[in-house]
Length: 333
Image (tube, helix red, strand yellow):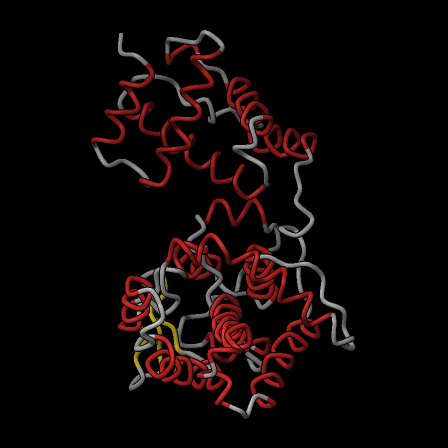
């Protein structure tokens, strides 16, 4: 009899499923070992549910979307075990979806920011604030004045946030995907950008922002001798620079950004947001516009099954990548 970890290694070596699932499977196996389960054939669906609660208590799973990803990982693992006759599929029970959803509702681990959504007026307020800021900022001497470094950093941060917000609303992919977007992915000739292996047409506004941002980088950042050499090298390749640094500070930037907006007493007060807020807003807008869930999956990086569980609206109309730009909610992005 093979150990639980040996089954996982065979699964991984055969490249079955998504490589991103490996950490989830490791967490599941560690839980099983902690409760004394050694035989893969002895595992029950109830063990899977209990593992979610255990990982929740350990703060490894702390949101619904991370729980859904965990579910998909373990389902994929069990499909492999079933096909190879190592074990029965614990997800074949007819009520597993209902049991899972009821269990999740009982845990109620919901981050108010993650589960928030922005309405169109809030999005307009955010983008208008940024446009007004750049319109007012007509003294470019500040950008090279060493005594006003704070304003330079604010200007640079706002440039990145404007791009981030618009790109996320266009293609609501994860932070790790956005932070790895390269300049070579953006085509000025075709006015498209490749995100998560999908080439998407950009709006006129986003096209303008990308061009302005690129000019700014090469004029004020990349050749700034006072900046860290490694940092400037990243900006020659990646739109958002050092992906690890950007990934780590992104939500901090967004929270401070909202404080800046609300400090100006806008017509529509903006709630606290993070990147998941933007993603959920975009995905919900796409669902409401009846975009094919398979297309949303390609743009977002979420599995179709995860999207189907999380967004339970009926989606029938199929809209292609080419038709995406006709959607009403993109007209102000």
